[in-house]
Length: 268
Picture (spheres, rainbow, N blue to C red):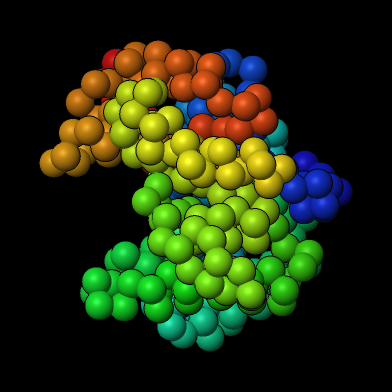
């Protein structure tokens, strides 16, 4: 991948479209940058073609990870996100300057930016729901216009159906995000293929009509609400459901797993 391939990814809008094995995933969140190389081996063995890699700083360690992923033909996106950025984007814009400096200097740059900015984490979300959702859309629009050469992906919840008005249009918030983003990952967290598709069907339909692709996210971490995660069902069942879900999706749509540690530790 290196510099040339990263440039091609940015230009062509590389996404999490389906790989060759229907029972495997296309992407994975990587929240802990202290993990050893065996997790990268696991990702490659399970069909992963893009990693959303969290780091708060860009160091030699970052470039080493990117090089090792490149050797396995895996694209790496810089993962970060705080709900506070919706109301105050200055810290994110500062981080973007650090990101761009790294991109210019590194022999192994990121393929793009993957943002996990969840308005519902705001402690006043119930009181400020419309304002915060509008703020998320506005932030995505600002980033798209400010950094036109950067590929931006976003995680959004499957329930982001609020009708909002922005830029002279009124439509569901998820539609704005799909239109603006280079890649949207829907946190469609359910524990069987039919349920995952059901919570995602409006977004799937809109993405198809808009000529965009969509990534569907699945959860593997422990949760008191069992229907949102494959934690109790285990790895074999997860693989079966990924294959079943794949049959329901357009060929260029993808499936991604949250997250690398809990996925690897699923009961075999």
